[in-house]
Image (cartoon, rainbow, N blue to C red; front, side, top):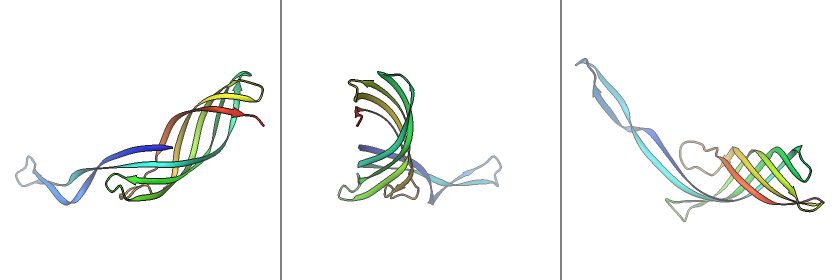
Length: 146
C-alpha cells in the first residue's frame, strides 16, 4: 500500500492579533490572527487484515458483505525533510462488499470495494493534532478454497 497525502489547515496564531474597530468609537475587536499551514507525507505500508464475510445471494456469481479489523505498519517520509523517515502504524476496522465469480469449483475471481477507518495511529503526525485517517479503495484478486 502506497499513499501520498497533503494535509492543509488553518490555526489561530498566538503571536499576532487582528484589531478592528466597531461601530462604537470606544470599542475594538481583538482576535488572534489565523495562519495557513500544510505538510505532505508519503506512506509505504504492509497491511494485515482479518474478518468475516456473509453470503447475501448467489452460487456461481455471489454477493457478500463483510467486516473486520486491520493493522498497517511501515514508513512515512516527510516532504519537508526527505531524509526523515518515521515508523508508522495504524489499526482500525474495515467494511466491504465483495462480488465473486466462480471460475472452477475451488477458485473464484473477486472485486471488492472496501472502506477502512483508523482508530489508532502512531508516528504519522509531527503537528499538534492527531490524525485518524480513512481510506476507500477497490481491490481484486483470486480466492482459492482449500
